[in-house]
Each structure stands twice: as structure tokens, then as C-alpha cells.
Image 1 (cartoon, one colour):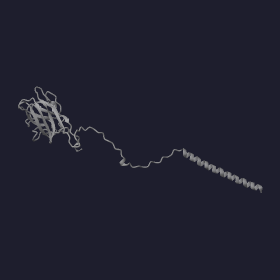
Image 2: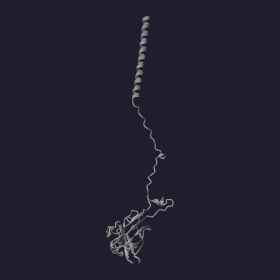
Image 3: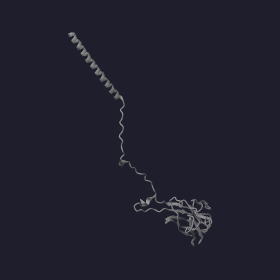
Image 4: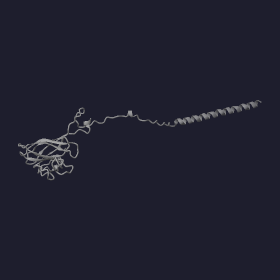
Length: 240
């Protein structure tokens, strides 16, 4: 009887020990798995998509460049472009003076006083296409300014070169007071009829307005390169 009780006790004790050992192994396995997971690098979550806020956009100031305008933006007044040419005389002549070129309605007004002519003499005056005045013949100035390829003629009527200007006649003192408006010419716009960078030439004789290609005006006796004095306002400046 006692032996039977002891046998049951041993059996129960063995089962309890086995159950305890089994539980320990399971806990050890779980802890090992946790340790392995702890050693692995974490996986970052993908960032949430965002929509830019247009009100938060970064603005910037554009560089302030010098436009060359000296006008008054408040009053809307702007300086008109102008140019000038100081004449260089050829050999055996004493022609002297400066011609000014100013914006006029639909063209350019040429003004100035030239001296050194024979009293009462009439001379041709033209704008030539190349701004080079190399004496003695000033052939470096090229032909008349004529971007449209028109025949030579009178600037006030009929087909003519853009650079054709009416004849000029000296007074009793041998001076010429030039004051001519030539339609179609411009100043400082870079276009084909822009006088800046061109040359103004005085000829030995009068222009007959008919002979081709230059009106039978004779030799070139004075020449001046037309240079920009005041630049035109930048595009849109007058509307500022």
C-alpha cells in the first residue's frame, strides 16, 4: 500500500517537473525571438504625402538693373532720344560744325550750324549707312542709308533713300543753318532706319534728286559719325 502511494507520488512529481521544464523552454524561445527582433534595424514608415501651400511660397527680388532712364515715373515724362555728329572736313575745305538729331513726329529732325562754305553755295547732305569717316574721300561711309532698296530721290515726295536729305544753301557768311525733318528715320531703336552708328556726309555739289545712285552730288567733302547722346526709354517705361 505504502509502495503504491510512493509510486503515484513519484509519477506526479515527474509530471510536474516535466511541465515546469517545458514552460521554461517556451519562455526561452520567446525571449530569443524578441532579442533577434531587437537587433534588427527598424523599418521606417513612409512619410505622409503633403501638398505645398501656395501662400507659403518663397518670393525673391529681381536684380535692380540700371535702365538708363532718367525720366520721372510719377509724372510720366521721359527724355527723348537724341544723337549728334561732329563734322570732319576733307582736304582743302574748312567746313566745321555739329549736327544734332532729335525725335520728331514720324521721323528725325536734323539741326545745327555748319560753317566754311562759299557764300550762296548749295550742297547735298545725306545720311550714309556706315559710321566711318576716313579721309580724304570718306568712301568708308558707304552708300546712302537705304534699307528698303529704293531709288534715290527727293525726301519730301516720291521714292527715295531713307538717308536722302534736302539740299542746304549757305548764307552770305558761308554758314548753313540746318533745320530739316526727315520722315521715317529713328534714333537708338536698333532698327534699319536708326541713324545711330551711321554717318552724315556733305557733298561738293547740289543733289539733283534724279541721278542714280546719289543725285550727282559730287565728292564727299565733310563727314561725321552719328553718335547716341541720350538713349531712348526702355520699353514700357513710359507706362510705369
